[in-house]
Image (cartoon, rainbow, N blue to C red; front, top):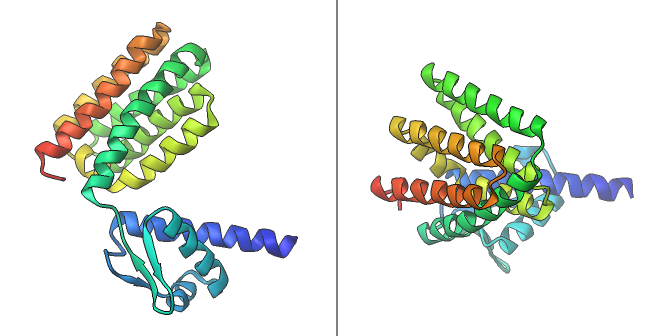
Amino acid sequence: MEKELRQNSLSTYVFKKLREGIISGKYKENDELRELAIGNELGVSRTPVREALRQLELEGLVNIIPNKGAYVIGISTKDIHDIYEMRSLLEGLCAKKAAKLITEEQLTELESILDLSEFYYEKGKMEKVHELDNMFHEGIYSAADSKMLRHTLSDFHQYIKAMRKTTLGESERVQNSNKEHRALLEAMKERDAEKASKLAREHIAKAVKNIKAHALW
């Protein structure tokens, strides 16, 4: 049992590292993912690598060709568009639930995150701004008290992380994003579920508009 648990843990570790590599562009479309090379790089045997590759195939990120190898499919612009479309709907639902269930402690935590985001923006520390942006959304997912929504939306965040860094790198977009987060927070403070849902959907729509304006898909 202990060996099996360790094996599962290793395959999950490899899966996350490879998925991150594909999403970030470290592994390009049509690149071959060689079990031995990846195992050596990550310090694991070929078994967890093989299991991780199967999981990546299920997610549509890798194509395994029998007797040939595993090749990167990657994420197309259509995939990104679909993710944002689905995310808009789910973020709206999540914000609606959160507005009804969020605690005073969680509201205070979200406000602190926004305060810190504005502080680091003024200091020009964009990596911290990206990190806090993720924390704000994760805080809403937590407040919604739905593990299924949280899991799905957190996965979407992983897929679009590289693109979000590009779009949030725009100074004007960062300022607007912070304002949109503030408005969303106020709606949740007012327990206005419908308004929170609408603002969350609009927030994603504006991010999409910004992406298209900069020809990122």
